[in-house]
Amino acid sequence: MNVSDLQCKLADTADEFEQIHRLNYRTFVEEIPQHPPNPERRLVDRFHAENEYVIIKDGDRVVGMFAMRDKRPFSLDAKLADLDSYLPECRRPVEARLLAVEPEYRGAATLRMLMDNAFEQAPRHGWDLVLISATTRQLKLYRHLGFEPFGPVVGTGEAQFQPMFVRPKRVGVVLNTLGSLDKAAAEQTALRRKTISFLPGPVTVTPRVLAAVSAQPFSHRSALFHDMLDEARRGLCRLTGGAFCQIIPGSGTLANDLVSLQLARLGKPGLVLVNGEFGRRLAGQARRAGAAFQTLEARWGERFDLGAVAAALDRLPRGGWVWLVHHETSTGILNPLGEIVALARERGLLAAADSISSIGNVPVDLSALEFATGVSGKGLCGYPGLGIVFHRHCEIEPLANAPSYLDLGYWVAQNGVGFTHSSNLLSALAATLAEKDFGERFKTIAERDAQLREGLAGGRFDILTAGEGACPAVLTLIPRTGANAWDTGLELEERGFVLSYRSNYLRERDWLQISLMAAPSAETVAGLLDALRK
Image (cartoon, rainbow, N blue to C red; front, side, top):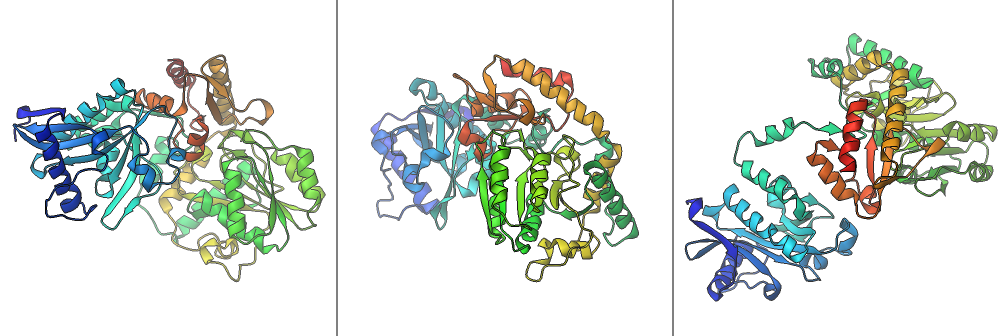
């Protein structure tokens, strides 16, 4: 095959349409068993009359095709209930279907031709979002092309598809990717591309932390491991005011699961405070643990009213509990942890907190909490992969009817090494605790927060939180007229700045977030501000 001999065009003759029907059959009946066979070996798409086909021809032979259709309902409407709820803001979506290329013509060059010509139609029609049902056999390829997955896999048997979308305006990025797909170094080149992360994790690590995680692993049963574990736990307690803590292989969600089982074992009703995504998750974890509790909710982006909290706590018996998120990362709110803990103690109640996104980013005091959680990444700037559970009592009775991995009492009884542990992750955590001047770090984050707020004033974005209730480590931006979070996030990535906008709870609200957990320099923040203004 000589690529220069191929022609790419819109199908417009009877012969081309007939060849399309036969290529459709060979691909979606014989290769991907999406439709039943028929003796004619010909498959006319049910939306054929409304499709616009981009085809590739080798002489008179149609060897590839790609169909575009912007009439609703889409085929995806029938496969996925409430399709629009999964999509980012758009004015005129188009569904791309029936991507098919004869086997001997498959490769980056032909795919590039099809995508190039198909996306060239977008400005003419006003299409601003392209939807596809990607065969699960080729998900890696579609991701390379810039498509984003959404919703569950649809289809049955061998014909399963992942709904995905891409913005036509990203066609340049997509086509550049296609141009390098057949180069062995393409993936490594992408990894080496210089980007600056404003994500809440993982944060950029220092050379000392990188060296620690790259060392040869050693046994979690060794004296060296126990010495390092004890030193890391002492460092964590000094930083937070916690009395004791366990460092457990796993995520922050795992750490909160351990706490949920401890709250459930109390056998007393409790209160879960919810004013964002992570408070909502705490409520779900308490429910799955079998705890008895009520919730007190505030609007996303608002602090809890202490009078309402006090009234809710008054309804609990002594020995009950309250559980909340200190820094609600989904909004940037810093909840009044000290005041709520004081209200709980006045009433003979226990308090627990998810401090995952506050530890290491702002000063915290966990001394009066029964339980609190953290992680090795985020504000502590180690590698992710270790959950931390702080507890006020040195001895905790093991649970009789819980998995041992989820039993805080079991970890305490095993002196923090209940199961296989990673010496590399622990070494990285110990290294960051030893080298960080957290007082200076808190000051830097606060200064960068002020710089951003001043630079964004009067611009294209409102900031969700301000004043005493705003955590300086995360700013949530709300686009004003003429902007949206998704497109802004994509454009910033192309300029080398990576922000949070892909999480479902951000997409649903059209929010964009800047995290300062990496404690960037003033020059780096100035560069981001300049990109945001443009």
